[in-house]
Length: 316
Image 1: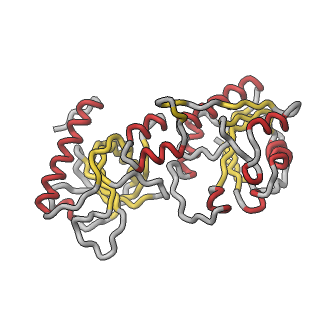
Image 2: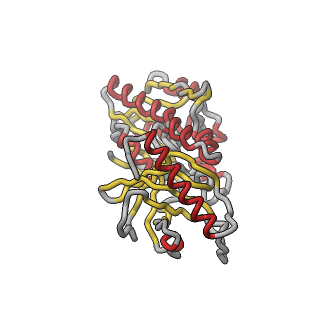
Image 3: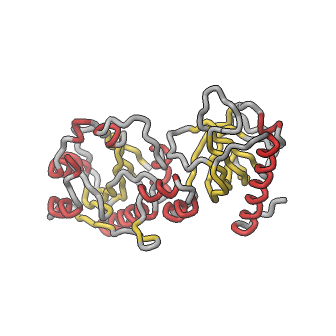
C-alpha cells in the first residue's frame, strides 16, 4: 500500500483516479470496515484505485488542546489494517489550524479534487469542514457531475450502531467480548518486554512486564485472558493491568504484566502483541502475599477453563 503524507495547501495536483474512503477510523471496527469495503466496490465499478484518507494528529489535539490522547489503533497499526482490507493508497492528512479552517466547499475543491478523486465513500454520520458543518448530503451536492458519492449506513449490534465511542465504553467496563464483537477481531495492544522487579517469579507466576509501543486506549484495570504473539509463536496467558495496590510502590503507575500459561523462556526485549479475549475480574488489593498467590492460582484456573470451552486449546 502506498502511503502519502499530505499537508494543506496541496502544492501538486495528483493525476490519479481514486475512490476515497473518508474518516478518522479509530478502531477500524465493523462500521469502518463496511465503508472500506464499499470504497473497494465503487473503485472496481469506476475502474479506479481504492484509497482512504485519515487525519493526524487527531482533531481534538489541535482544536481542543487535548494532549496524550489514547487510541485503539495508533497510526502505524491503522495503516496495517487499511492494507489488510484491500486499500491501495492511504492519504494521511496533516490536521493543523490552517486545515481546520477549510469550509466544506474548500475541502472538496482544494483537497479532494486535486487528489484525483472520482468517488467518495463515507459513513452515515461523517462530518467535515470548519466546525464539522459538512454532511454526506453536502458531499453529494458538491460532487455532482464531478465524482460519485456513496453513504454507508450503520452496522447494528443489539439494535445499536457500532461506533468507536461504544467500543471504548465497552473496554472501560470490562466488556471486552462485546468490544471484540464490534471490532470484528480481538482488541490488540503491542509492547516491549522490559525488566521488572521479579515479584511474579518469586510468587511462582513469572510475568513479562510490557512497555507499550504506542498510546493505546486502556482497557479496564483488572485481569484478562489473552493470546500473546511472540516472534513466530503464540501462547495464551493472563494479563494484569493496574497499579498493583497490594504492593507499596513509591510512585504507583499503571503496569501491564502477562503470565504465559504454556511458555517457558526468555522474552526480554521482544515485542509482544496482546489480544484481549475475556475479562476475569477487576483489580483489587489483597491483605497478604499469600492471598494474592491464591487469587492468581484461581485466575489461572479460570483462564484455563474459559480457553477449554472457547478455543481448541487444551492446557493443564
